[in-house]
Length: 81
Image (cartoon, rainbow, N blue to C red):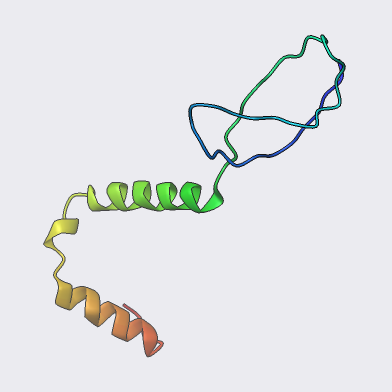
């Protein structure tokens, strides 16, 4: 089987136009459409899932904004928290 790979940007989700293909008139081809992974979306989803998991830990909702600010300040000063 001959394979040909190309990239296009969808301009109209109702149709995809492929041009200048290296195939003969009448040749039967198999078309597989794969969306390109967006690394930023993947990272965002992983981070959102991490936030959901950490926020679901019992007792987390009891931590105050002041405690969080104090931990950040201690970290910035190089202290332990």
